[in-house]
Image (tube, one colour):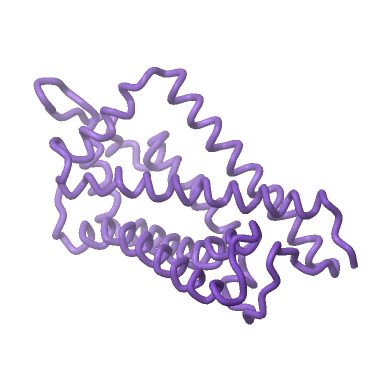
Length: 229
């Protein structure tokens, strides 16, 4: 069955938006890692710096991120329906790689991540989950001013086994999604061949593993009592 240019275009757009989200995941991890104290003032200073940006910039970035996520989800659903309807997956470079658990379950790992994102926003951005520990309601001194206690909020959350379990589970899901998504991007864009594809797969897996370890370190060290508020 011959693929249409619109189908190929949807796959390319999904790949591009996917890698845009990978970039955000990397930047987000760098910011979150300030909870370990490499930034003067820690994650409280990092959060205060973000919130001190002009409101139009904050709103604009959030709208762009929302649009990227929505486009990725929409095209992901469309392509999944097409593939299950008998259309073969289209890559700019054909691959003889066998299907993996991650590749066969991208729609499910993506769906779980979408649910997790909503939960994460409700907990740490809008702060409606466990409002008694919300950063906006608990101010602490920072450089001669009072700022929201983001570190206290995060530590209080991850001391709870259930919350830490959710986040670690979500990061396992993220690892599975990225381990296939990163290498699939290069294949979709035609930037790989049969010789380079195995290396790209390994590098994609290593990147996904590095992000997984970086993210799970935060809830695990807090739950273990190593990192305190």
